Length: 114
Length: 108
Image (tube, rainbow over all chains, first blue to last red; front, side, top):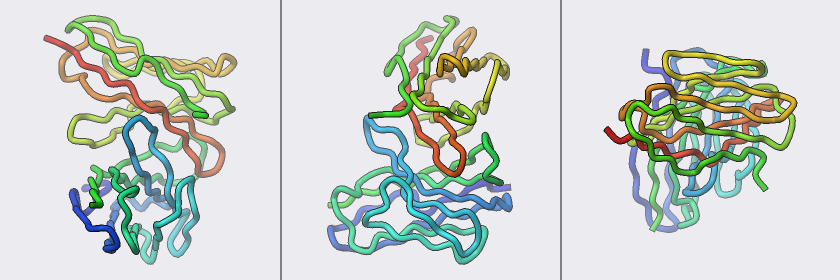
């Protein structure tokens, strides 16, 4: 049982390049989230999904797009990377939207934009 | 403005010491989560609580809803407890607000 798997683990981009981060979960979770973690700041929500085929904006969505074509996968795209997007990205999932539902996290993707 | 505040930001303890990490939140929440992030980055959920107290091994989490405050205690600390501990407020719907974390180092 792999839980939440993120790929890649590390990536270096030049300004203006594009890339896609993949998050996969094998727990049949409905809810999936993309967060970014920056020094001195708490995890901030980029986008989230409440089920297959749905996506919604979080706290810091600008410069990112997402897709949830299959329930188990949640993709985060950067169309034109900027140095401000240098961060550690975490995917998370939960079974439902019941208050207090436990979150499961991926191992993170360290992205540097030069 | 941060809805969730943690203290201290950094903490160094000797092995065997009793450790307390505090979390205060400014708005009403439905549940409070304590997370652990080890060097290397992975984040693991330790506790989720909406009232009272929970215990798992040497870890104890408490919450006081009226005071909007939660604490994470570690008894008989060990170097393997060295990690960043993060509290997060869960709100009705899909939003979580995360504290900035407490970096704990336990020295043998």
